[in-house]
Length: 256
Length: 256
DNA sequence: TAGTGGTCTAGACCACTGA
DNA sequence: CAGTGGTCTAGACCACTAG
Image 1 (cartoon, rainbow over the protein chains, first blue to last red):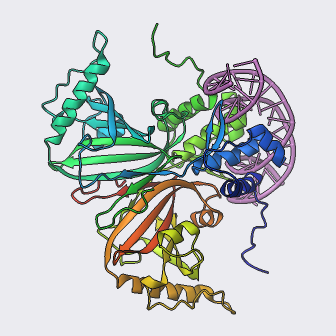
Image 2 (image 1 turned 180 degrees about the vertical axis):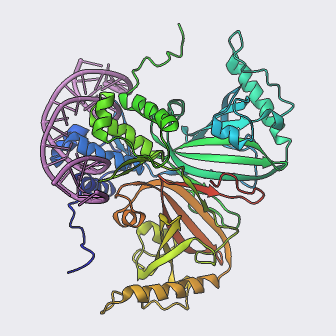
Image 3 (image 1 turned 30 degrees about the horizontal axis):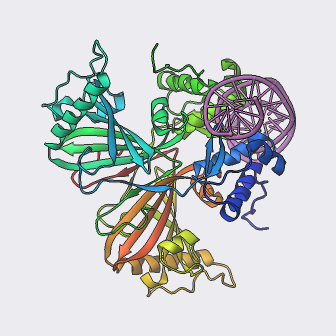
């Protein structure tokens, strides 16, 4: 008797369904084309809608499908390659970077970030919210944490839950000051991690997705003067993005 | 009237549930501790099991929980940081790398890989299956594709679906020859991408997970003599892994 | 064998989109 | 407004693990 057993277990329906659909997408559908609705598809395959949805969810996770409430399910374009690991030690906000600053405040960062910055919990820092756009679509949301010590020239008055309106404008101008001050430091190195997460409510809004959508969380630690000068937590849409890390000595080919 | 509207929409039950559970995990549970079973938990929160499972799935996706069929749900340890972006241009299989070669064969790669290697579809290449272990647990499965042109000294006879048994042993020895030959080339650069995927059946077995489990797929292109000398497709368990990309000039801090 | 998580069903209602 | 995907229910059975 063979030892491998070669799948005595029955393949789950949703798994088989996913394979069938995946093949159909390759052969019979064009990018952007809309699929039949979930109730019809379920009936066509003779399964409950929940089972069909399990297959669709997997395909969406793999970036093959795009589903929008009230609209329908469409065939997704190939994932776009977004360059992480910016060219040769560049500060965020340096000319030519792909990010747009939305607003800024001066509050206490989450505990893990405070630890990375080597600050006691509760210490306020500059927090810049930024967005990365590609082809007119938002692909990433970022929170950039800059301790006061890294940007002594930037006033820390803005965003202190002021009395009147116009915080957005005040925050934006403050953001410019923070970035300018940051660029005066010499960037010695950076360290990155990538992990899977699910979008918080605010990030989801920013990324035009539902809360809980799968995201790739990139944490960057910027090092200057031997210390951690800033920390960025970037949240990329996992369904549409392929992160690329270019290395010197190789002109990019994988970048979409 | 406030313009922000501040969540008129009712928060979905599973989302609220996830928040409650997440807080409970932080405050009332220790790593490794087992939670009550799903039926009890659902009853305790007054929701259907499917709804509870939606919350648990999210928490598992975020690496907070670990669920095993027939056993139960336990509190997961923090994700382990695994170093990708091996120190300064090292070939796979170089002394000190964290991978173990399982077997090797000589077959045609999938179409996207063939394109990366600039080979016509169907051309056979050396395919090495490797596993990366951390703390005795498999964290990644890899398929390393090496075209014959990169390793002229390695015979391409092994794995040709030979007549008798013992392919594993023959494949393993062949793998050694392929890696040795590869190391004779001067590595000029490498390029990487990271994206979200779901585990294929074989990878899932290798990673001790169920098929479809979320994984981080790292594609590495090795460049030598101005051409793509090899391509590696590495599949990391997304629930347990945090990929770290160390950069020169910064001693690692994020690496767990 | 008892208990766990994994799969599946057939409904229902809701939130959102666009005509 | 009709039609879509998103949420939720209350069951059922199965595959797996461990005592």
